[in-house]
Image (cartoon, rainbow, N blue to C red; front, side, top):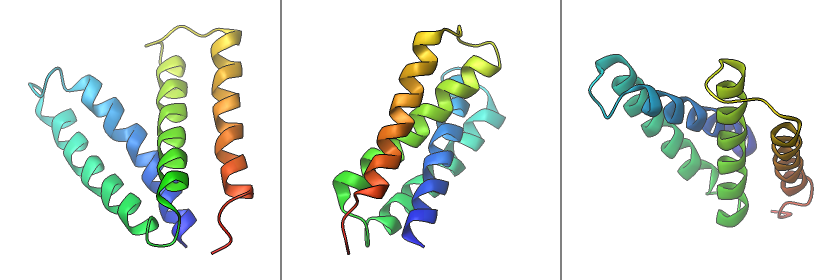
Length: 107
């Protein structure tokens, strides 16, 4: 269950990062509210998952999921250019996240 919560928390990290970018320095209400709610839920989920997953692994997976999804979302919506190098690097990041899960702590 901790891994599921961690994955959902990583997805919420991408949500709050995207909302933060759209908040225009917290001057737009809707993206600012989405940012605040997603941030709180993402952090709460990360903290909960860290009860069973070592902090280094949990944090790396959380950041990896959030960063990967944020880049993919930005590229898919035209906010960022798409290139073969970026795609390869994001896939490498995803591979590292999967690797951390596969070789994770035996607890």
